[in-house]
Length: 466
Image 1 (tube, helix red, strand yellow):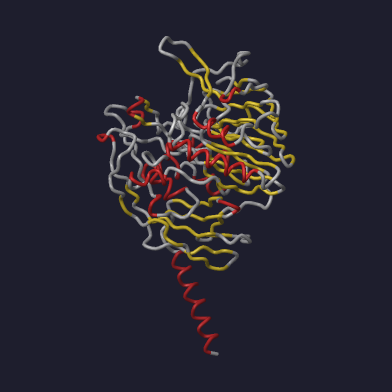
Image 2 (cartoon, rainbow, N blue to C red):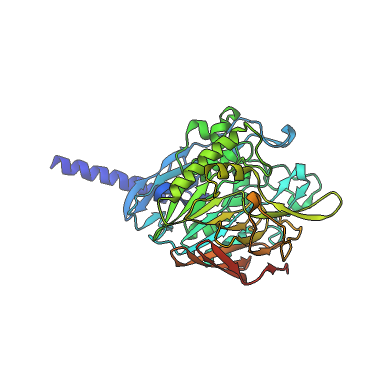
């Protein structure tokens, strides 16, 4: 009788804590992250003094504090000192690892999204923040929904009802204060604290965060000397270690790298997430520690790819894509989009990508593009077109006969959309086959593609800006 009473008391206490959490202030953000080997992590950003409890299959599951409210000490960043300030996070970041067999998760009576056993519908977005960067003299009109349409993109993508979302990196672009007299960004929050993260990502992404769980790819904007402090607190699915917060530059060699991990899609397929935050356009010089780190990553990716028949590799910097540039003489040129990672990949495997890696998803170049290589290499898709100021130097509709991507690869199929905002959807039609659609901000389809293993092909060679 005594043990029964004790059990009842514990249940009542848990229920009381759960009930109190339900009456607390609405959270700033709530979402589910997909981590290694199918782990699912619920996150809540709240101004409350304690973390809430979730309802998991009608049973309370208390959340734990990942990061306490506070302001990180001022650190060295990629910007000039006068354009930098300490990163303030005046909210509690809570998390809970969800049971693998959980069927229903709720917070304050509202459901949190879970992935199905077999993922069939994926939204892909990337490069979503509003650019305010003094060094580039780049000012995007953050309050103009046409100039910064990420909120519309997220709403339209949520209406497509995806099973999961893949963000291919670069979430925060409001790095510096809006210049005096610049009406396009007047009053915008800036820096790397929570207010800039809310404006650039958490608030506009809200409908899509509610619609599906996310696989988050880290971009160069989330390196430790940029928005890494927010990345580690908010979006990295792994536990937060003291030497990985990006608060102390002495720990950047640790905080800037994450081991690749696999997110299962079911039916013999997976997405491998690769953190390439500190890659560069040019090749790494001899002795650069980044090459050593990325070589270890490439070897890990090859090992992960052996575990299942079909792998999609998602990283921010595209290896097999191209970028258009305008030189000082005003001439437009196309060049490989990245030369730094190819050396590490080729050293790990002379074939560059192991068999079974069928598709590459990336961002970084602010366009949408697709390249296929006749099955000799994975198809490459770039989806860096979901909110950030677009690249406008045109890509050619037909590639020059002598054009080669990094590593000397020659594409046999190419499609692009320059100066157009939107999102991409992938609907699974076979173990490694996908029906792909490219959508504008309102959800309209501007191009369609098919992916069959390593082969991809699109209906339209080049979508022209409206």
